[in-house]
Image (tube, rainbow over all chains, first blue to last red; front, side, top):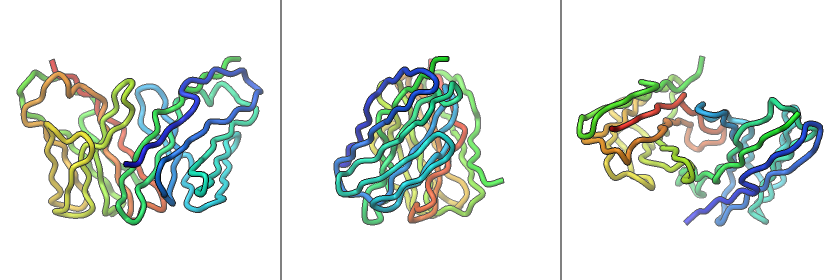
Length: 112
Length: 113
């Protein structure tokens, strides 16, 4: 059974600081996704990571994937208040099974 | 605009009264699925469909039904809703394989009293 674990689950940080959210998963997968969710809203796709060593950046967010370690990271650089949200990683089952399994989510609060 | 459309956005109903939440996508995606989101439990898959007339159970299928008669539509049916089905529901779709990710609908907040 595929399990996806994020840490930390809650993160409060100051504007201007850097931090990293970690996502570990239990079985082999070649597709990992990061989503953002604002309260009561839908899930917004941030990154799709498809191969070992993949790194993608958008603004102050950067995501990476290490399939051998079964680990993805979401790095926040010089945080700003607008990045406050809940961030989810999600992993697809391998070999064409196509089932998306989510981590618990990391609630990020960025204080001025 | 490429999107997944869910209706209704909000619904309050009574126990036992059948309801349907609709989901439609305009991206010609093969794969569609339903999730429910509950505090402390995260997002859990209810049902999914790999293509027309192909559906299968996810992790929490009890009390739900689905159908996939057309590629674009994937309705979620609650034949006899109960209060424990009060939740935030999301429909999602993707190509198969999902190399471009999944697109989620705007969500349906269901309250069963």
